[in-house]
Image (cartoon, rainbow, N blue to C red):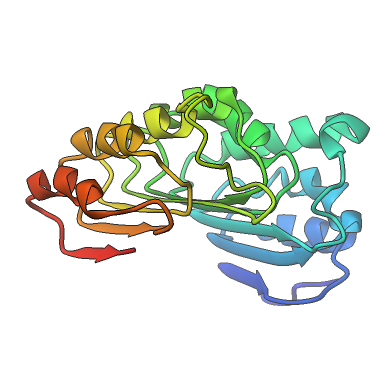
Length: 232
């Protein structure tokens, strides 16, 4: 595939496609000008050569999504060279402010690797995942400039209301003190809910899954003097 424009600033794929290494090589020819990249419904053929985008280091926004046929591909182990190459690529994107990772296999593991060497960068992060990891939760508060955060679990990956599970995600979100917007379908218990919103005084918009929420959950929100929108 050739991208014919001499200076491409934005490239978007919205639906079914068969992207692969040739497309990624072509995009690298615009590495100095490409600012916005959205690649949705990627198949395994794209996932196994995603590191070919390594020269696209001027990105300001990036959204990646895999097709359902690729969402369980174990590329972290099967193609670890590519997996780590993508981590190095994202670490090198020093202008990146907005990032979306939609059902990327081992996506939170990859982001934890990226965040080790790339703190204080992102303004907006959206994740849809079937799993989360301690490493990701530990690394998330390092994004001290983060203002908008959406963490969605797939139906299969949505944690249950189990008081025995560690409150990893709640503690991670609570560490992102500059957040203005939070959206999640995580089923926080009340203690986790209070931990989160006692720590985020600047919140302006909140979108939550409502299954466990009753009147008492609204008490910690009273102190949020900047809150403008609440969706449950």
